[in-house]
Length: 291
Image (cartoon, rainbow, N blue to C red):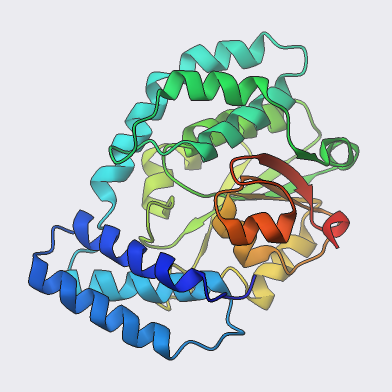
């Protein structure tokens, strides 16, 4: 997705939130907002929206001198999600279609803000998400391809929900001929996204058949950007690609590939318009069928 005018205030709000988590004083927060607005004034309107978000958060990290403003938030999110993990793992395992229920639970995790800024009854939200189907549902096409899939690539989203992604990934590996699953994380801090360090701390690197890959967090390291030709080639090299969350949808939605599936909850009116379902609804969307 390309950046839209309505993205601009959202990026300013993101900068304000990130500067709050970085414990910046009022004067420094003013400086952040001014520099972010200057950056946004120079934006090429054909740029990917995800690229602009990376620039905004790089400004916060540089001015705050805090490498990961969301570090404490991410740990709290993971701890909160883990409180309910065993309970919902049982619910998934007891269902005849455990793989589909695990996907629904992963989507429910995407819907929930596990942090302290919003008041969620997490257990109720997870139960509701587990029972609800996908508003836009290309699950049958996914299952048809999964039957023959040897290699999968899975683009992760946020901390907290990654706990339920793991359950979905475990079920994928258990019920398919998959020999390898490449789990894509950020190579450094960006918002509350899962980083390589986060994935290792959660022992994803110790899972059988799972390998970790990284995409750039906006600092311009050695990892490719999400919307790069290299990442597009990753998708082509795998039998199945799963893109989790709205930000990854924004970065990958221009790739109309039959082996690419988007799993997310719509959280933004612009994505609502692009996909064609309402904010708050879950989708399991095949990129090719979305043409």
